[in-house]
Amino acid sequence: MVAINVIRSVPTNIITGFLGAGKTTAINHLLTRKPAQERWAVLVNEFGQIGVDQSLISQDDSIQIQEIPGGCLCCARGPQLRVALTRLLRSARPDRLIIEPTGLGHPLGIVDLLLGPDFASVIDLRSMICLIDPRVLEQPEILANPVFGDQIDLADILVLNKADLCSAEQLGEAQALSNNMFPPKQQVLTTRMGELDPTLLDRVRSGSTTAARPSLRPRTVAPNLEQSTPEQAAEPGQPLRFKGEMEGFHSQSWLFHADDCFDSTRILEFLDQQRDSLRIKAAIRIGHGWIGYNRMLQERSVTQLAWRRDSRIELLSTQSLDMDELGLKLQGCLKN
Image 1 (cartoon, rainbow, N blue to C red):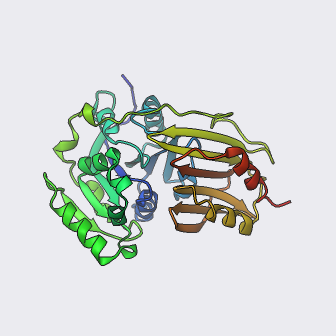
Image 2 (image 1 turned 120 degrees about the vertical axis):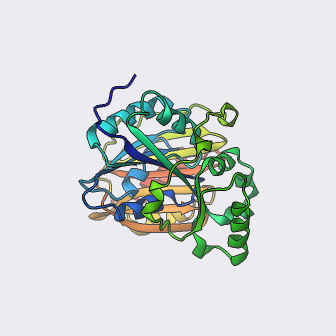
């Protein structure tokens, strides 16, 4: 039994969605609309072996971020969820908790833990929100992925995100399919850039997410770590690298020391040219500042970051990539 010195139940939401659906952007939007007097906590799980999302999420003294890299919270990193959640509740004493599983992760194991004896008295599990990019209707490999289907099945609220990037036909078909689900969802809404109304967080959770369904649990492959562990610190000019594999996807990640500074033109050109990568996320030092790079297929964004800890680069692919060659090219993007 986990003893947690928390007086009241913490309103908690799981925000899920497949790769590139816009979960982190949605959470950032919610954080900008957080009541000033409240403390919020965010627990993030990433598929890669280093945590990049924590550098892309806005934070201040009233927002605490805890990250668990290295796979699905309910599978390969399940035991770490219990420990990280206990630590976060004790240290942050949040007025609200948001959990963001990896886009390849199944949320059922998280629900089971939150409703179990260790956390039932301190967690008030509310609506589960699933973001969907309607353009996946033209990606049969994603539609056929069982995790994608289970994320939708378990959600209370479906959010058709990135509506501004979809065609009218794509959006209309996604709306029709979502509105005709049985049992019906509490709400199906359309938005752009993850602009969610914070009142959605206080919707009551549907009963369908309370029962464990073992048949939905995915087969997982334990992460294959290469050379290093995320707890190690990189030395200047000597980046650490990490490699993982799960559900047929491969992650290739590099961690650079904060003193390593990239040439902005060279590093952006390098990342833009990685056609074998399905998804790329990075927090990169250029000059006296840091930028965030986020790309799903050919759609990418570059933003300014308050992050100052180190540089982190993660490539997600359907086949294992040559880390030796890529590492040399990354080091070639550093300023002399």
